[in-house]
Image (cartoon, rainbow, N blue to C red; front, side, top):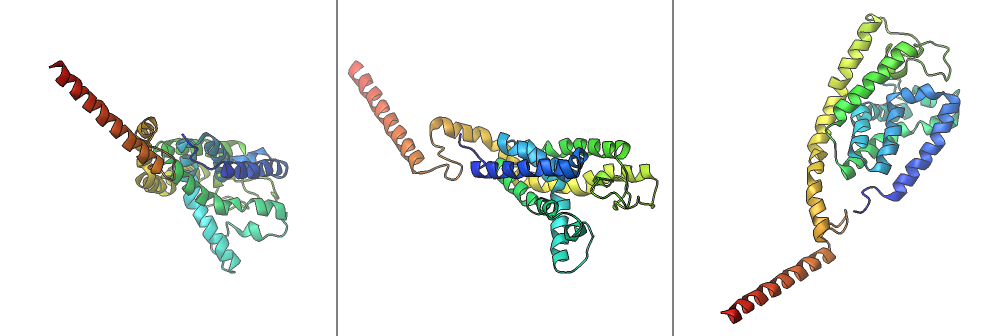
Length: 259
């Protein structure tokens, strides 16, 4: 079976990750990879090489909705319109240009994930799998990582927003445990499930078509993902039909002679 993801894309994505991981590690530290978006990068890296529907579906469920908001906020910021403030750091000259340039992955990763789901199909296990992973990341961030503070600099604080929407100060609307509970219940319901339903409706049936594709490969009719029933496949089909007709005619003739 031919690869469903172009090798050029695999190599380009791997090169990007080879640049991002050491730079992020040196500037932010390893805890930065506990953010949902950074975990999505790592899962996608494994997913493109393994061509795993589950590994590309999980980050799609987890980050598609918030990253589309990131793209919207960034575009409005470019136009001088302030929306949520989530991309204000991209315009902060105190942050090194290299770090801001690498952070542009927030803008193209959601579109890459949609492309990968289109190529590989959507795995319905992505919703529970990502939800459990997200819960684990939030619990680690809440109990073991620093909360928000205004002088954090490049140190990751309030990872995955488990203390509130601001990295400078914790939210004061409710007790901390209540906010965490709200996040753990609200994110799957409000963000993950709608994406899951949309992806499952769009590409969820792709997994069920694989046995049929395997049969086409066995019969020699499947040529490629782009042209599954190409001229060569049709030629093989006609040849097999002719051979079948000859075998049938030969069998009939043999029976007549026997009679």
